[in-house]
Length: 363
Image 1 (spheres, rainbow, N blue to C red):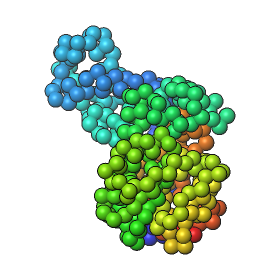
Image 2 (image 1 turned 30 degrees about the vertical axis):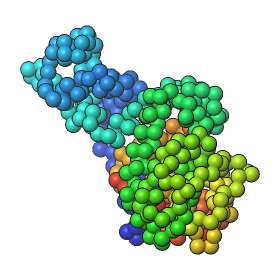
Image 3 (image 1 turned 45 degrees about the vertical axis):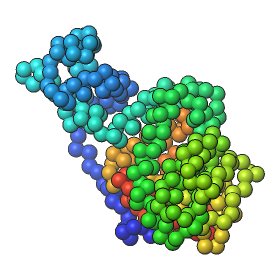
Image 4 (image 1 turned 90 degrees about the horizontal axis):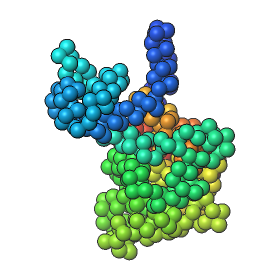
């Protein structure tokens, strides 16, 4: 394995951790989990009803907040008491509430907002059937939105608010990695790049702007490509579109690409499906084609919070997306590459702000 710094990351999962907590601390942590769904909705209400925003500008007591925000005193008091219990707000000896550091993150941090909106608008209602999804291997929570086999089939038909939160979550993470990916992908001067799982065409657009001569072939389901076509209209013939279901056994990917990129794409499939997709990519690749897989591998994260978020995102795939995919470890992804008959040429760790891994493969 070759990494960006020729060293394995010292992730929390490789460190030995001693539990110095008291039994009272352990019991409290357990209760946090027991009441987690209620805590989440309380935090969301504090944010969306304007309480956190108000306190970010000036300390205030419960009566002032109720009057200014046109809420009942009961509603404000109940939320503030829970906010204090969650360390979102703090009350001083004059009964004035202020925003804590955690409260500021809930209000102002773009990642936290993207995560909260995604959990609330995409995952929350359906997650009640998680156990059923785990038993059946099907996304049973998706039924709260429609009768589709996967979320991708119905993505363009989701209610506007829910669809907006889905794309905001997806784009927030992928967009941050783009600036660092571009020079790595263009290092070998590809003339044609095939973008599999092109979605709305944001990555393709970055490539077209980065190199004025590069040709792009976008591969995705028809619904997503219809949006991409509108977004890339001005690039004319430099952007070609191939509507295809990569899970269909009859699907044959276009040949002739110098580079193939799958950005946050393979985590949308089971390991068996990943191997099948990579075999199709191998069949379309030439001997000098470089195949790039960009994924946030949960065991190659520098910060424990990142691994925590990725592991929980796996349950979204279980319950909402498709029922059988997840966020993978480095070993799992490398095993899929090997089973498909490809070789890992190089791995770049720590790509982007949130520690993506870019895996470069060859036939």
